[in-house]
Image 1 (cartoon, one colour):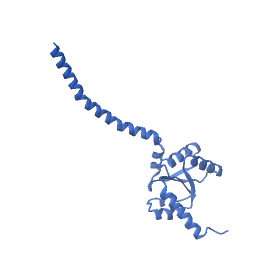
Image 2 (spheres, rainbow, N blue to C red):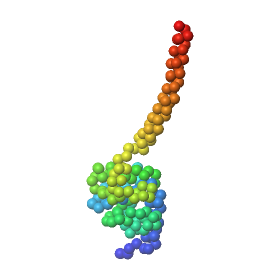
Image 3 (cartoon, one colour):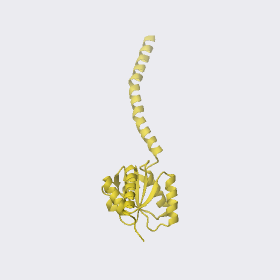
Image 4 (cartoon, rainbow, N blue to C red):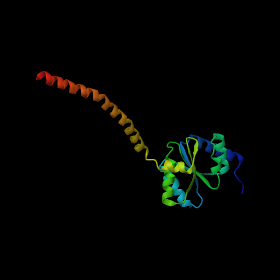
Length: 175
């Protein structure tokens, strides 16, 4: 049985460089002990959420990481490695993998990548616990609206006082 040719390896590294380079978010997992059926279920589930799941050779992934200048990733590329990544959403891979682990207890998170920076297991878990994007946007909008409504109240204060003063003067003149 022959191994992969040098040309094929270069193509795989190039593909990884493109995918990791464009990925907004990625999660490295250890997939040992997971059945083929579960792996297929996981891929299907991830695809629905815009996340791709790819089993990688550590040596090729290390080359891709070095080519991209991603520091701190090589130490996580030991044992069976698969990468879940999203080109759109930096949080989707972390959330999807965390949900799968809750349901199946078979996958192990090694580390993550957000915008090309390596994050720890704790960082991946923190990402997974973030509220959905729509909720975050609503929270930010609410936080931005609070100072504005406070500012409007501040502006209305002097106007109110002026109104009270004018009303008092009007009553005084009537009397």
